[in-house]
Length: 342
View 1 (cartoon, rainbow, N blue to C red):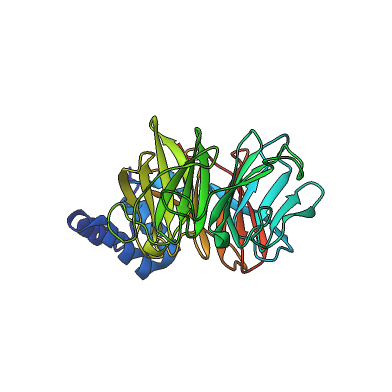
View 2: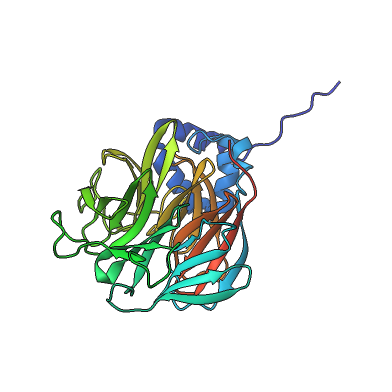
């Protein structure tokens, strides 16, 4: 009886597996990606099981996100968030103005015009809304944060509240870019000062951490950010744009780890704009693509979008949909989660 011969392996498998045991894994992965391209890299990584320990079984689960649709007609959409009250039919969009888009009726309303009064915005960026109807807005060119009470009418007191600028005892914001509200604290990335400022819900500044640079715990042009619970610990992930990585901190500002470095191979970045936790993984937007990562930076998916201009802020709806602003293409892309990674 003839024995069934084993399936042929890729001719490079013994060499790559041998080299991978002796050299730094990141350098090997970078070399393979540049040499073989995405499809070739995936085949070799699956055979050799050398992609940061990810097995071929998990490599077959790389279709977590798929492109579904896009909404056009915005002037320059950057950051976005859903109104978390009710059925979440309204999408708030930072554009040249602050726009509310009704996803069911497909209609738009201007919430705030461009300007520097208490009810205006100038180059708005990051947005965050909680279940109580409080929306926090990075009013970038006015160097301030705003809190919008979406339960009130425009003529009511404290409908919009702004942070103090020149009188802030701990220093005014220079260029707020990203914001997330978590357990009674507001975390704001300041692109101008390259740090993270912390406020209470009344927009009283409490502290800030990090500084400009490329060392551990430093930031350079930070973008969007999010808080994710990892193994019982709350972690703050920041898109460290000009350092081409995602920085991870404790909520007290202690540095934990940097994810990735500059590069186009999976797990590395080219000018990441935003990061969001979805289910049990991270989604990162870059200039031309979306990446899905484990909380430790393990690459899981690279998703290119046809006709993309420049991707900016992310928002998540019902743990099933991911939306991303595309300022250059003047649209918002809708993505759908098709699988959950375990």
